[in-house]
Length: 185
Image 1 (cartoon, rainbow, N blue to C red):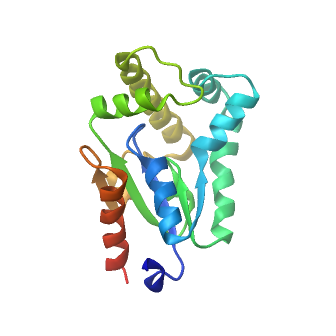
Image 2 (cartoon, rainbow, N blue to C red):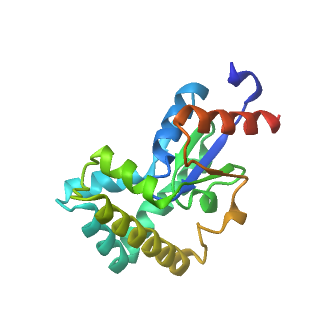
């Protein structure tokens, strides 16, 4: 249905932890029949293989610039491809001619989403603990990426579309994105 107006599409989805990036990215990839790439999944797989929880991985990345760069700079290889969705905080920086989307939501809602998800490598006992950790992670990533790439992924000027996903489900968010994509026709 939507493919009739999308010939070559590169979409990056960034945002705050728990805002819906991965769920929306995967949902849209199915609807639009686009490949999906998730940097968070690569990082979680690396952490799992190395017996690290997510917080240990973040501390490792803060200390090891080369490891951090290896995750993020592998994104550049996607410039040789078309028709994909990239779930990455800084995908906008590396993917040329892409539609860049930023998702955000209320911090309490994001913390509740993550707590209910029971994500692998994230073993939180309370929603408050999730809230504290995702706030730390957000600040850590902003600091690391500013230092490594001189870019702030939280600067909304980098994005073509910004959506507050508070009180929205994946279908509503995706409908907003699809309408935006259709307007680019």
